[in-house]
Amino acid sequence: MIDASPEQVWDAVSDVGAVHYRLVPGYTENTLMDGHERTFILPNGGMVRHLTTKIQARVKRGAEVMKKTIEAETKGGD
Image (cartoon, rainbow, N blue to C red; front, side):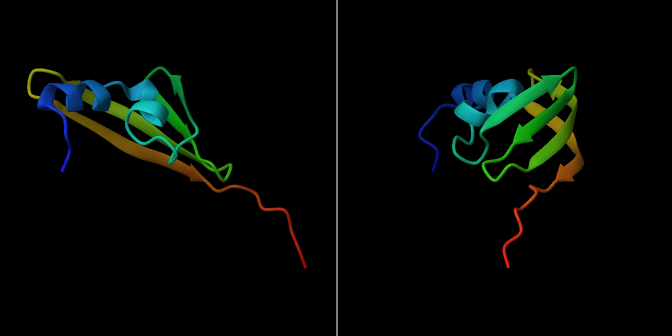
């Protein structure tokens, strides 16, 4: 259960450049914006790129497409 009004939830969800501290803190370390492209920087060093295709505030709806996942490079052990 989310203890927030629909308006508060939409405010956080639609703030596409602040996912790392408003929506899923700890899951992402940072969010980088380049136009409509958003890149999540993950705690393990990986990245996920999304393209925001539509934000409809009137009906509180958004759409995006995952473009690319870049896995973190791991330092080899044995």
